[in-house]
Image (cartoon, rainbow, N blue to C red; front, side):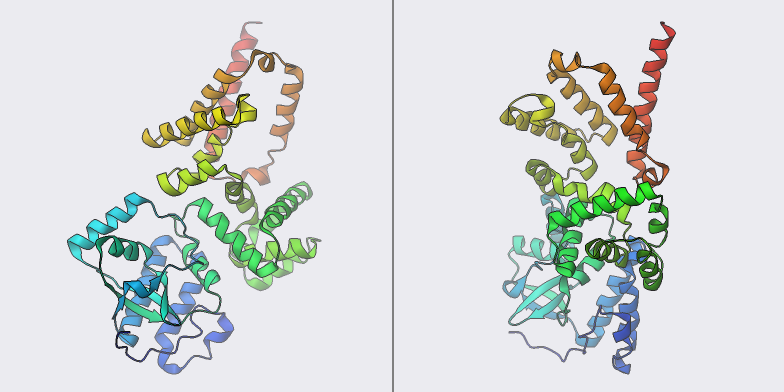
Length: 380
């Protein structure tokens, strides 16, 4: 094992605020960085990268930069980011070849091995190049490694919604002992109930509030123990429960080929949710045929870089082409009634939780239908 300098005592790095004041006076600067990183969910992605870079600089000055054998470095199994596109890795390979390793990776110790805390793309690129060592700075392994990695990655803009959904569910499962499917089902039920009760705005309003304010509000919502645990955990991560239910957790229900396309081909989560409509049931074809049609559509979306609105139009065309005449000749009155009820459910509170792109898609769709209705009425 390579020679090592004495490492600063950072056992409490990324721990709760109560533990910060117990650190040695000599670690004052690192404590300051720790406090800022604990507040990652309140700052922008640019600020986050700045804090990580400052932390790396402090670790350099405290423990020095070491050459660690790549064979002793392992990816962090608790890393929220599970998607590493080949295009991204090759970009890193070219960067390493051109400029060398500009920044050390951040590792945490685990026996004779080291876990990656930050810098997995550099590690993957170096492995492809056949490098034997990586410049590294070391921190002791945090007690709650998954949670700390989650807080570090959660609000980075390039963390895709599928990775985010799986990481959040895993963290809640570790904290509450609930199963993943229970977490998703319970949250959905809570959001529906709070929407009917007109309390969703209150819940969204405390996302960035203090822990005490969050807990005070949660205590007034008449939640079961499991419901309270889930809501409290999301708020502790400074996540809007309504937004997670509407925009993030649906990623977990995606078909396997769409999840693969997100991770390996860069398909966007919002596009995947639209393509999910191309199921055997909706297309009224056999599952194998539906898989083929959906994969062809997915390839078109990725290669032609279609927007979400364009993806929606493509899916509508495919569905229309494969709908049977009997389906289109079904009960129009019943269909209109069902649609009307669905539109009525789009309360102002629920709409405020949707992403801008989804609101724009909905607006475009409704405006088009209103135009169609207007044309029909003119002819009568």
